[in-house]
Length: 304
Length: 295
Image (cartoon, rainbow over all chains, first blue to last red; front, side, top):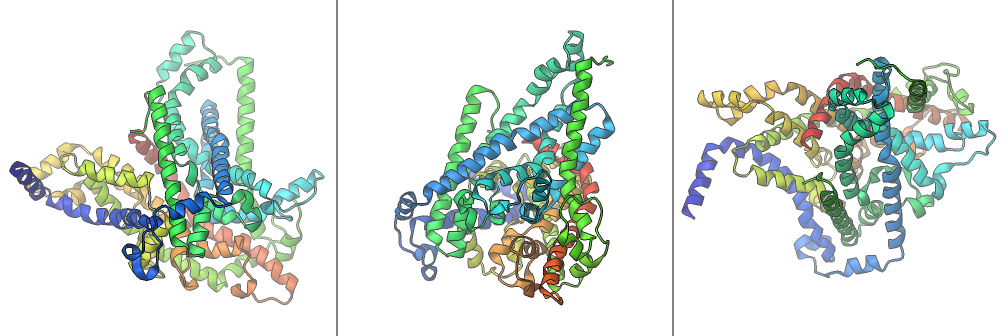
């Protein structure tokens, strides 16, 4: 024990400046991340403002039970899952395909132009993007203008529950296509040119080259990003849902995170909404861990 | 590597380029539409039905509306303030953290790293965060908008990787000369990492510019609202024009002006970012690559 203490003191003396530098950083994480984790225990209590976090009475799993027995849990779970799964199904491959297509372009100027243009939407604030969506889906908006041009009737799409997911996902693709492709293009540019040359000598045409060299070269990247996406399955981009939804579309638009927001901040039902949020985080963790485990077993790629 | 293209390949290339061109148009056109509309006159734009290829009755009225609008101007100054105060804080904290985590010989660095990475995967939730901020007495204060997001773990990891790439030999010789870690950080690491610092500064800066959510949760006073929050009122919540104090002579004119105002304010709120964009572009691809390599 003595040796341990001695070496710890020595380490501290030698590196005292580094430890000093670590203090504000650790303080930040302790206050704003671990603090709320501790605060999350109010999910198991009936939080009363006056009594504080410690003083409020324990109620065990009461809130979780009432959440699982509620009438709206299925709506929330369904909407959250569907939005995530559809988002994954359409939104995940899009940047990959985009990157692969860009990679095939031989005209340097055009290649750069496409990439540069594609990054722009990522930098536009989510509020502005949603503002444009609100404007474009309105009865007098751009989308309806185009529909009217082809003889269709004008309708406001943002108040239609059945259109919500389409609008949400297609606008997410619009925003993220270019930015998402960066990481794949980076991986693609790392592929050894000699592999291609060897393939050509062996008589492979472009398609064969693409299938046997290009695609496998980005698979590790694809898998890691896929795992990360799955881990986020239940808490995807909900700021955007918050901006785009309205009471008329709650049926398809209301997801777990937006419900937590409404219930917690607007109705001040702190304990209950924290319980739901905790449930959300835990499910995410389980999903992340499972996805990683599956990947570990089937390939060599994994997150940790 | 010279390769003669076969006919199917040429066809593919052609379709590919056309397809990508279409994507470019779809990406750009909504933005172009907004810009064109912002330079049109209120009545013309309100009545227009169809694609816009040029401004209708070109006028700067839209921009007049924006710059005369108290709420928008207040939002603008608030955002600039949050950005000016927040970004240095971001950079300082992230650099300190990246330095600490990049020191290999540190006993606790693995523990620190794990502590930090865990927060990327699990959090206590929005409500507990709200209660913590409230407990700190920060509700309604501008610190509540800046502090909770002070460090982006993703940026931290990228910066750590960049710091790790600096050769140990420089550190060693500085240590022999008697320098301690603070000096090493300021005199060696940072001057060699200016590009990555610039990128991070721009990332954080853009983040502040686009930020709205913490303001919604933690601020109560409309005079403190950042620009994006004002935009949200205008563009999404369709707030009554009274709160925007438009001077109008008729109901119809008010509606028309609100519509034009929306387009103009989008342009005014987004153009600063697009100015910065060319500078960003050179670096952020590299930055993402560094981050992805270490993962």
